[in-house]
Image 1 (tube, rainbow, N blue to C red):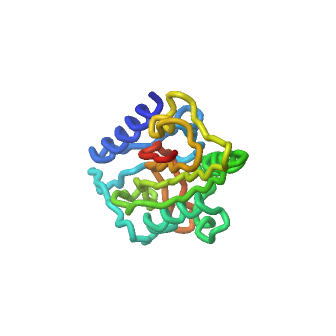
Image 2: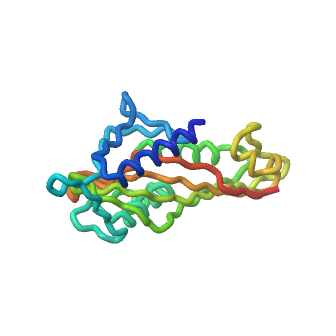
Image 3: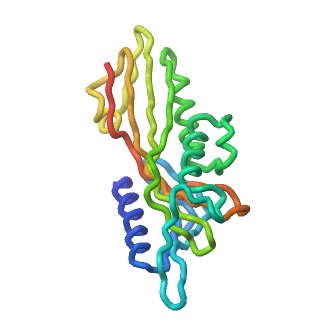
Length: 214
């Protein structure tokens, strides 16, 4: 139900934007939004329309256009994925170390600490198709992150997930030798105007899309 609510909230925001309403993305009474299995903490409120006289219009931003922005939308998403994959990479310094990044790193650390299991995690991105200029000169970016969790399991060990979990739904049972889980994370990213901070994710909805193993 939380995942469905997250999708509906994101779709509602997008519909209001397309309708041309002066829409603010407000993340709950205490500046917190729960999206899928991950909580995102943010203090950001982004108005996603731009006024033109008495009328309001949308101003799309090209994925490679960095004019007036801290980073071009695609560059910001790529840097975010790089930060998720490796915090020591130079690209990680270009984005905010937000709640989602922290939670993903904690989850990866927990998986890597399982005795007898060699764990690795890879991140990638899909091409950005939708980005809108905000009223303050920034941009709101709709992006998809690709995540792959890999498990190489030592003899005599096994990896299992709770009944009813999405991981369990894509794997017939326990993993005894090796396995891969692939995730999509759809994120709503705010890219501020140049000189006014780092890109950050306002919310995300994601989960397992495929899995294999034995």
